Image 1 (tube, one colour):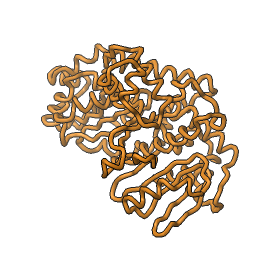
Image 2 (cartoon, rainbow, N blue to C red; image 1 turned 45 degrees about the horizontal axis):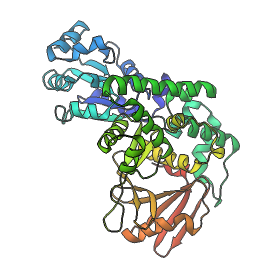
Image 3 (cartoon, rainbow, N blue to C red; image 1 turned 180 degrees about the vertical axis):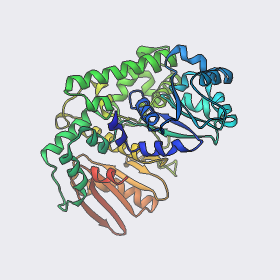
Image 4 (cartoon, rainbow, N blue to C red; image 1 turned 180 degrees about the horizontal axis):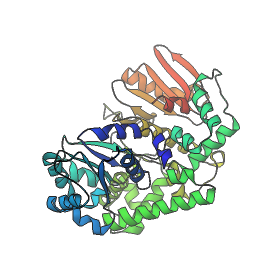
Length: 423
């Protein structure tokens, strides 16, 4: 458990223990939210009073159904109205529909109660707290490990040192050491769920991935979301795993799955709300020339996607290695940028850029598993840059390390690992 302190989010969580804001940790099941909260509880100064309650346990939910009931629960666990700060840790709080108002009343009327809560469904959480906790909360999204965190969990100092020094390489086409390639391949194959990362052997990793999905189905889908057509839901997930990173045509997909378009959209929204995947929308300014409707869908963990594909082959043996590499880049961007919009760009003539990262400056990012440095690698990116008068673009591959200047436009080829390390 101690190793979770190496997670990049942990210092932020620890720092926010000292203010009054309600801390909300969201993310998929088994990503480490509960463990992080228990570690935060251990960080409390000697003598600080606290309580931990898991709302996944049905019998605990009655405590959160009313302010009076929750206060009685706190009193029984040592809370004193005139005492020092009392820390209340609530796991899977979205299971209690009325708890948002309870939290609001506690925050407004009991200033010495500090609430730290976690949940696995972003929509349920937003519905519970959007209005009631306005101005009273900080929300932190907890994702599977990124590659840097993965290396820390694996514990190899030599591999971590290689990672830290890749940016120093000068050759236009670089080659990674074999031992680094092996550890990267493991990450791209089995993903970044902490328990999977720490497990020994491929069979154990596969079994843990299966158990993660089984728990997800039991707790979030069957037990909480009340999916009416479970076979269609599972079929949809399997199809999306195959189509990962492709544009999604809702009409065609609904026919393939055998459900109404509205139901399909609800299912995909549910998959996003429960952190299985992420939807990104097109970037556009001209509806006549650019794609404006069809979104793309990316899984948030390559190990989970491979579970649905039933394919754990090493990267070089995969026909979808480009998709895996693109997903890796997307996942690292999501895990390491806060609130920056991410879109993709595509014209009706077929020109496409994988990712457009917004913010103060728009940055087009094209992903190539093995770049060549030639025009075919950056033609679409250059087209976007000219269309929007953006001076700099990035092409991320596994091996290329050079810059190309075309008139006033600069395109930087860099190993994807270099790029995400700087995020």
